[in-house]
Image (tube, rainbow, N blue to C red; front, side):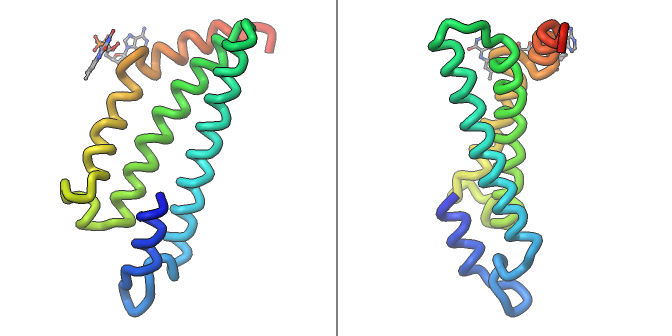
Length: 123
Ligand SMILES: Cc1cc2nc3c(=O)[nH]c(=O)nc-3n(C[C@H](O)[C@H](O)[C@H](O)COP(=O)(O)OP(=O)(O)OC[C@H]3O[C@@H](n4cnc5c(N)ncnc54)[C@H](O)[C@@H]3O)c2cc1C
């Protein structure tokens, strides 16, 4: 994230840095915000497991949300990097491909939603 932030400050397009465009700044804010929320929520689910509390809903919510965030953040990172993001030297394209499995492996998002559905009774 730090490298991406630096790139957005340094790389110029149409006479100004990418971060000089509101659309780029907003992308970076969304990425930082979503990552922070995903991490915090996952820690909350882990704390419930650690406390011996039934955390089925939080676990499924965390799996669904973090898989989606990982993919979205990688996608936006590539967008900000432009052509560089697509080059294997930058590593992000590999992260993007790796992130795609998160909604499939270890319980697909659809199955996680079926599990979450069963916990909604009485909401
Ligand atoms: C690279 C990779 C690594 C893997 N590593 C492991 C591993 O280490 N351990 C392990 O146990 N498994 C592993 N898997 C298997 C993974 O868990 C399964 O791919 C996953 O559970 C989906 O099963 P499937 O591929 O048979 O898809 P399918 O069951 O054919 O599902 C296809 C699609 O239909 C949807 N679907 C299926 N049933 C329903 C339903 N009832 N309601 C709504 N939608 C539904 C699924 O969500 C999915 O989107 C790995 C898979 C890959 C690709």
